Amino acid sequence: MTDDKRDDQWLNAMAGRLEPEVDPALSKEAELVRNAFLRVEEELDSQIKPLEPDAHLKILERVEDQMVREKSSDAERNKRLVSASNPLKNLLARFSAFLAVCLQPRALGGIAASCVLVLAVVTGKDIFVDDGQLEYAESMKSNLKTRGVIKAVGNSTEPIEQLQNESGSSESVESPIRTAESILDRLQQKGLINDIRSISAQNVDISGLMSKFNTVKSANLDPEGSEIAQTSSKIKLELHNLSSILDYLKNEEIPFTIEGDTITIILERARVPSEE
Amino acid sequence: MMEHFHRPFIRFFILKGLGSHEADDVFQDVIIKIIKGIDSYSSENKGEAWLWQIARNGLLDYQRKKFRESKLIAPVETEEDWSRLSDTKPVENSSEAEESVESCVLNGIKQFKEKEPDRAVAILMQMNKKSISEISAAIGRSVGATKEYLSQCRKKLAPYLVDCHDLMRAQI
Image 1 (tube, each protein chain N blue to C red):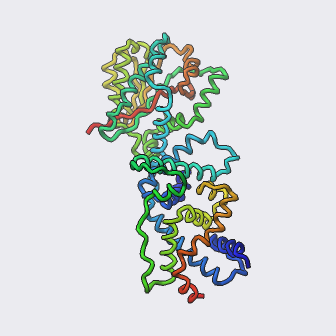
Image 2 (cartoon, one colour):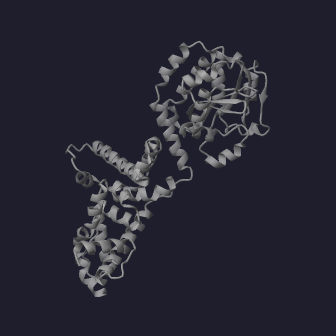
Image 3 (cartoon, rainbow over the protein chains, first blue to last red):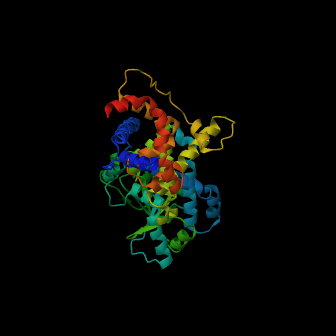
């Protein structure tokens, strides 16, 4: 028998495929080597820590962080937005500026929590979109980053407890109220608060905000929301003027989705530091 | 996908000389590369072979980075150079007189995997019934070269089992 043939038989035996006519010595050798390799594999496996339950979320966060970094710099985008006259552009610019602050390295000071910031524009009626806008919105749904953000935020009817179960505790934020106040402070400073017709927030106690911003007409509070102010980062702002919004978002490549009467604009994912 | 590839990839990284923590880090990087590169995936990429290729590239990236950080200035030209640079563990003494054939072979295999990690990877993948294209992607060779490489494994392994031959014969 040629060496090549014996090598092939040995390899087959290693893979657990023992040929009937194999030389017993070769068969024994393969068995011993195979068992030894199985022991080596066991030893390797003993060094492997099991995958953490929220490992996929951590990966997703890293992917999103990298994608955000890879995009054009926030500063450059802010410049473009601020220079524009559209009130929504200004609004988004303020959000971006706020987020730039959120994304500063101070998040490293404590255990950074994740905060997903979205702006949901509630139209109160069916939204008519042209093919281009629809295609763009649909593409956003299939976009990994957007999908991840939507999953993390959930939708307005999804119980927050369910969100927590799905994502472990990593999506809880320490200070959504502070975040919301910062956002609304900025809007007020920039004279944009009048563009807001109503505010609603899911599972967030925004009574403090409501007294602070008496120009806001209504608030939609979850009855159980007052004690779990740390669980939501979703704020809905209802705007007066929706003209050109969709075209603007599409042209600026700002991700948005349309669900029923709500356009959800995904601004950025931010890291909010915990206070220690 | 993460769960499916977690163990095989980490095993691969450890076999190639990484510590378990390093292997975890490289695994995360590799998954990110897979996610970000998913648009470039096509059926021509041959399924899991594509993923193994990314795992291998991720490992090489890490080893290059580690090399730069180690301040070594010797040029690294070949795959074998990289292998030499990876951490090696002390080889267990296989000359103890009263050992069984199993422990003798195990010692030989442990030495073999330290010296020939790619061959150990190839054999383990063969044992786990991975396809030739997956094995070739993991060890960075063409399919044809991988077949040849695998068929040589027995010969390459033989010197590590010389001390065990008498014990083996006694068992037959």
